[in-house]
Amino acid sequence: MARPSKPVEIIAFEGKSHRTKREMAVRREGEKKALTGIKLKATPEVKNDPIAYAEFRRIKKLLEAIDKNDELFGAVINRYCIIVSELKTDEENRAVTQKLITDLQKKKKKDKEYIENFLSLQKALASIDRSIKDKRSQLFSIEKENGMTLAAALRSVPKKPETKTNALKEALGG
Image (cartoon, rainbow, N blue to C red; front, side, top):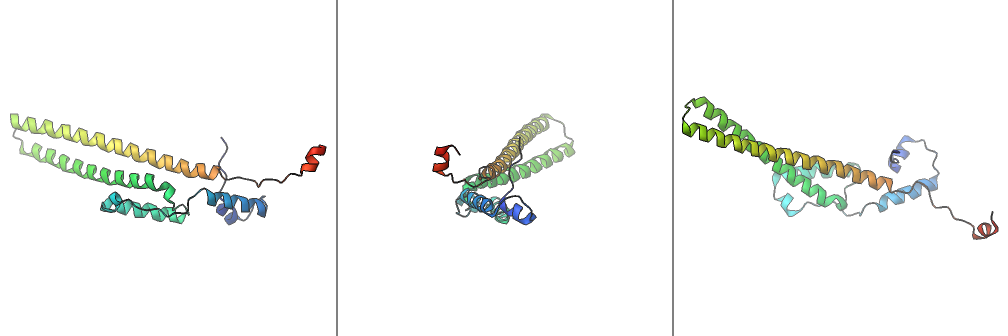
């Protein structure tokens, strides 16, 4: 598979290109049309969650740096931030559960109640681990898809300007 074309900004930064000024102008316009021009906004759910909102601000800053701070990505970015927050909560719950297991083992009082508590905590820990694994998988999928979406937007940019054809020459076969 061929590599996607470079954005106009990178081509201009490199300072060397076989493209004409007209081709560059057409590509620049095509890149602008790939975005809505509306700034990325946090949903109320994200704003009310301190962890999610901190992640949102971090991602927004990164997107601003590459001129992709666009509401077109809003739903995905907001969902991503909520999942990051949920993952952090699950990781904290896992640490607490692990500490409870350790404390229970230190008591060394191996009776029926101990075994029931231990098994219950182990089940809870396994459930939390599954949740963490699922959330990490979701985050990876969103990251991958979001990257592919940006790449797809760049691939949709026309590489060359449309050439105007002379109808008379075409009719005469020349």
